[in-house]
Every structure is written in C-alpha cells, then in structure tokens.
Length: 311
Image 1 (spheres, rainbow, N blue to C red):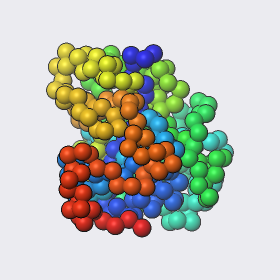
Image 2: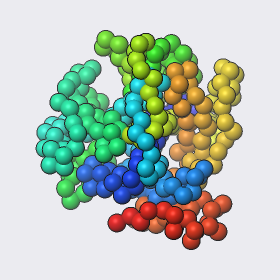
Image 3: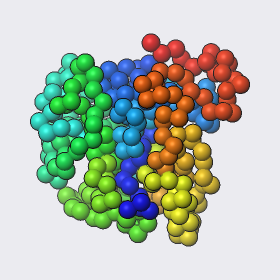
C-alpha cells in the first residue's frame, strides 16, 4: 500500500477577504486553523490551512485569500465541489446552523445512496456535507458549538467537471490506481481502496458546459497523497513517461510536492505525508503564529505590515 496514491491530501481554493474566510471556516464550519503562513510565490498574501487537530492528510482545506480578487465560477475544467464527511444524522444540525448564519445552501438530496447537503462559503465556493456510507473513524476537531456528533471528519470527495472524461480517467485509473465504482447519469464515481476515507473522486462529464474561471470562490488545485519523497519521485517518473509536463520536487515546508495539469484542465498536485505541520510549532500552538518560509524570514516586519490583521 505504501507506494500508492493514498486518496486526497489537501485541496486549495481562492478566497477574497481573509478575516471573512477565517471566521467562516473556524467559527461556522468549526474546523481548525492548523497553519497560518504566506503564499510562497506572493508573500504579501496569507496561506491558510484548515483541518483536524494535527492537519492530517485528507482533512486539509487551504486558501489563498487575495483581498479584492474578482469572483470566478465553477465550470468545465475545474474542481467544482468539495465534499466533507459528517456523521450520520447530522445534516439537520447543519441545515439549522447554516440558516442561523445565513449561509447559502441547497436542499438535502441523495447521491450514490448517500445523503448530502450542498452549501457555499462567503466567496461562493461550492461544498457539500455528506453522510458517508463508509464508516469514518477519523477524529474530528470540535468546538463549543460544533460537537463530535456533528463535526466534519475530513474530506469525503472532490468533484471534477469536465468536457470529456477520457484523459482524466486514464490518469486516475492507470497512474493513480482508482477504479470506477458507480455511475449516476453523467456523474462517475471513482474510488481507491488504498485508504478508507478521502478516497473518492467524482467526475461530471458536461461536453456543452461553460468553461470555468479560476478566481475568487473557486478551487485552485487538488492534491493527492503519497507516503513520502521516495514514492513521490516514483510517481513523477510515471507521469513524465506519459508525456505530461510535471514540476521538479518542491519543498512546501510541511510536505513535498509535484504539480501537473491533467487532460481535463484541472491542476493536480501530489503531496507527501512528511514532515507534517508540527515542525515549526507544537500541536497545541498550530495556527496561532505566522510562520514564514526561510527565504522570507528576513522580511518578516515588512510582510506583517502588508498582511491584513486577523481578529
């Protein structure tokens, strides 16, 4: 199992106002800010990582909150919906909570025999809470308002919307080891048996669909998980042999990464479990301090002046 893709590692999206993003995810959705750092390519912008207590792979939703960015929209060529796993029977709690906080939500519905509740964050990012058929024993992060019986466990799935699924399916099945599980209309569900959770990729095929625009309120990329650097580089070789342009290994401080664009247009990343988020602060302190990559530490005062103050 150790040399396989281990489901989803993290998903990265784009937001506007940093405070609004922080408030929604930590207070309304009740996930933990596990790392507060900056965009490695734009140190004047935060990079927030939200997850469970330790930011375990498969729980990590990250954001680049670019102040004042124009709104994008999900469409073909994008990762169009993020699915979170929640305990059975908890969707009523979430519906009431979203009503209380005036969160845009849709009606509870069923997909592949699972109940789900679609909603949007303040930037319009599309998400869904799903009562998974697969037992989810992951330990949730809880708050005073969001208790264990309702709290999100981590990712359930990611949905890709594509004009044609053929090339993407080849990547998922031939390289990543996923298999087609079920089909409902033009939605195809692919799963890996390498892990129990965060193991689902849904693909919607929409040949006539409008091409999405990646900007505020949309997903930037989807990261798949591997155990370590050795496996990472094995996958680099496999992907390069298939003719894809793939980056060299990049050190993201908390994991190592490769990036390539899959045939449907979505930016894919492969990321390692190592070294994890508790490398520059303790588990108890995660997310409380601004952590900077070594190349920006000498610019800390200047960067702190540029970044919005979080309350």
